[in-house]
Amino acid sequence: MTAGDIGDLRPGDHFCCIYKTDEEHRALVTPYIRLGLERGEKVFYIVDQHTSEEVLGYLRDDGLDTGPFLESGQLSILSVDDAYMKGGVFDPDGMIALLREETEKALAEGYTALRVTGEMTWALKELPGSERLIEYESKLNRFFPGSRCMAICQYDRKRFSPEILLYVLTTHPLAVIGAEV
Image (cartoon, rainbow, N blue to C red; front, side, top):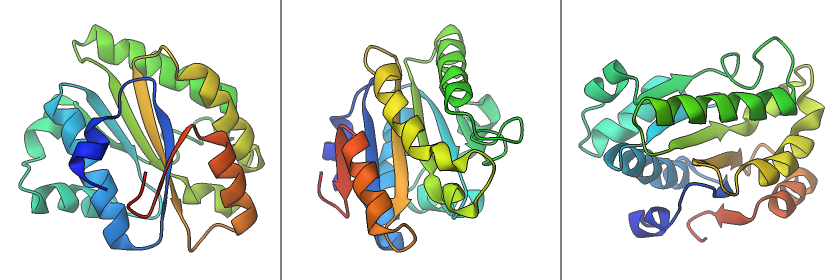
């Protein structure tokens, strides 16, 4: 995947990334985050399998000083508890309401869009409501079109079963598998 491919993505897009290696992960999320920041979008990254330090390291290794973006709030690294499990239970409708609210807030703050990416490995931990993951992915397809929000849902191919990955592919309009869109 090249930065040019990522550059074709626009607000309203919802896609998944199914990656196998840390190199594939880095090659996708680094340009995705960087382009959002350069385009004046607010960027949320929801960590689970990777740490915030790893993700920020990707950007620093790419020559980006993340300090000003973090200080201004343009870039936020969120935990699973801050996002998917807000309130202690995963609620697809609640998460979509949060995305809608954060998109409106980003626009009111002068950003051009909200760019989100989340690691989905949290769903393997049998947290309350995690069985509703595919329902959530499906409902996102009604939220994103026409919105000023875009998202990549990240799936580690080594961790998810082929059956779940098949559902993931059928619920996302766009997919990146390894480095291929």
